[in-house]
Length: 306
Image (cartoon, rainbow, N blue to C red; front, top):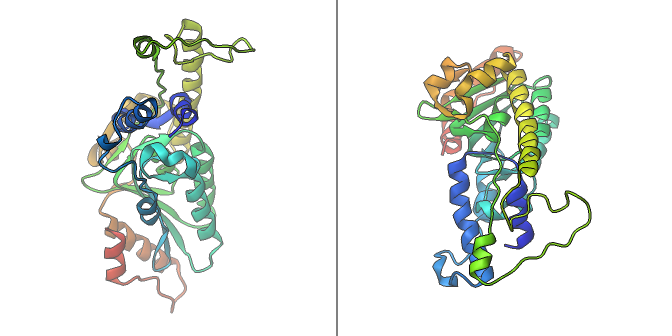
């Protein structure tokens, strides 16, 4: 954990559930506190251990017969080095790589995005969404929220040709937000005075050593609005509905349960993961020449459903 990473977290627009960010903020606070000598090392029961090995296993692509299953798990960021805060997660770059590998693999007939994610950074999501929507012209692409596709994860999932949610799942949180942290009182209490030296009128705009002024707040609001426009436009294209329907309905930033999401046309159906796999296999069989089978064995489906 370093100050450059903390700056990235605070300056990044997030398409992430705020309550999830609250949990990650606690991780940041503990690590930041240790750097400042404010938190004892033994306050962290994990000793600062990283979760990347487990995350890597959870996000490894899998197969169900001719279906390439691409997991989208945990917080979404653009590059692997940004996973520090999240104790694991996934990256848009790795999802893109898995998607392109599936597209060129002649043994892959269709692609399933297996999503359980609260969202993440907006960086890289728009580009990945465009890739997913374009991939539909080459091979069937299906997504399932099992059991959560919120914010950036919904942005990604709704670009698939079909989007499902498990009966107990949730989707939505269509929105973008940023946070500004004013740490001036903390430093004042520590007896630390901060002097900023810069060149360029707005170079230090939004710095954390004082409150956000009105001009800076207008700028960051405009930046957030731009990402929100990109998000809602992408949902409208992916779900084939007017932008107004996305902005005025679809939860307006809330996460909706499966049935409510179906009523809002945010998904195409409600069914468990294994049923989605079987539907994709039936669809593939109906379009495949006689004599070729796309059926995966039951054990494989059960393994993927874990």
